Length: 274
Image 1 (cartoon, rainbow, N blue to C red):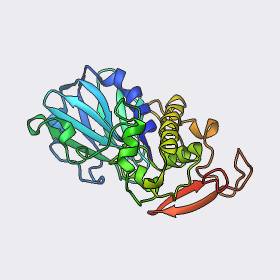
Image 2 (image 1 turned 90 degrees about the vertical axis):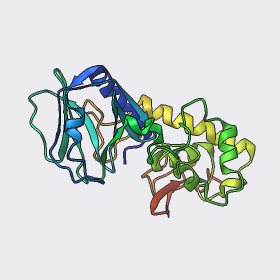
Image 3 (image 1 turned 120 degrees about the horizontal axis):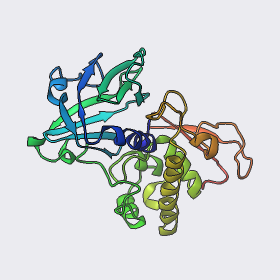
Image 4 (image 1 turned 180 degrees about the horizontal axis):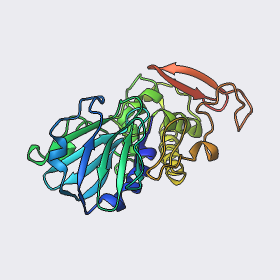
């Protein structure tokens, strides 16, 4: 699933070509996504200036004067810039057409979403999908103290506390595994039992792992490509545990283990992570 670094990499790739430009046409080829795309959506935004491209958690936010378009890439989606004449591929379900740019939303599983939030309903941050999200992990509000307050008293496993999104947003499965390895914390450890020192290590690890992923253009396991159609390089350069079950730990050579937590695969080193 595209996680925060992949979505932010996509945002950085599309923003220079979308922001400040008139969206000549929004074309919906397949409306059956996670939630059906509203039939009137193309009429709402076609011919309007797209003011800016933001991100909140794993959602792309495309702002217009009268509202905001929320885009989620789902399990296997991508949003890429193509030439004006490039043929549409199978599973290219939505396209944004500008005078000099064209973008295609590719989503084989159709778990992505395209939703409209009207400005009359208030700031887009009040949308039900965004209102309860935690702080951004690379923002000033995400401190070690914030993380410690969020997990205080929790018996929930620390990995699941990170995935919940209420304390910090956008630390998905891949980067939660990598952050816990970097911090030397076992994924089953009850969140509330972490000492201040270990919380500080985890906070630093989360930020370092996400920064590395952004520098590498995100991760690619299967379908993800960035806005230019290129795969991410994080796994080649940085991944230590994710998707490496049975392979030796880069640090101690102990075989990496795989367990399942809340129907998600968790990878860890039983020796390095306590």
